[in-house]
Length: 87
Image (cartoon, rainbow, N blue to C red; front, side, top):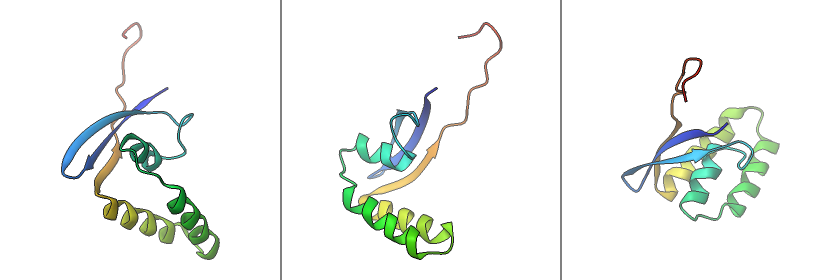
């Protein structure tokens, strides 16, 4: 089931479809949508995970890196609950 990501890139709000079967995280999906190569970032993220004791260090590293790339808010859109028989 795909979801919608709402993100801001260089002061423009954008929407894309997202599925965990294609990407590991929403951050990887928005970088791919903008054509940004994350190989160096992913290696550094693994190193930060290895030396840190909690998730906060990884989250701070990720957030600051994506701000440097020009991203603002990156979030999943709320799920749309539909009744039975509605499509």
